[in-house]
Amino acid sequence: MATNWRQSPTGARETRHGTPCLLPPNTDATATLAHARFPGPDHFAAYNGTAPIEVSSGPRKIYRLSRRGNRRLNHAIHMAAVTQIRYRHSPGRAYYDRKLAEGKTPKEALRSLKRQLSDTIFARLQADARRAAAGPR
Image (cartoon, rainbow, N blue to C red; front, side):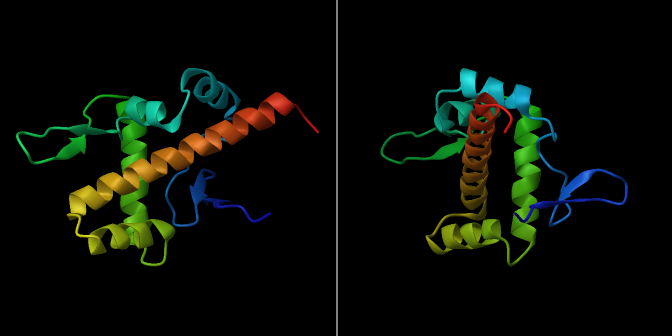
């Protein structure tokens, strides 16, 4: 199985594009927390601040990112999103370009990418929790 991370010269785990991994190698406690505390990706997005908030007035519909939530986790997701946008051949950049082609502004496209990353992290935490519950093989 190909890994999506590598060991840096300093000993820290990094992704293929050189960004630090968001989750520590031992995510049993984090996975249990995510599995027990958040019933779905929407709740996890609200926790980490990537769920959009409607700030509409009258007939126009405008959404912005929440300023609430876990700021450290939100910052990590933001850095991952910005790094993915920087690399032209990453899936994150393809998603960002697709959102721009749909007519979204760069900030709206970044907001969408951050939410997608949040959903991906939640899915990974769910899978880790299921694997931890199954026990060692």
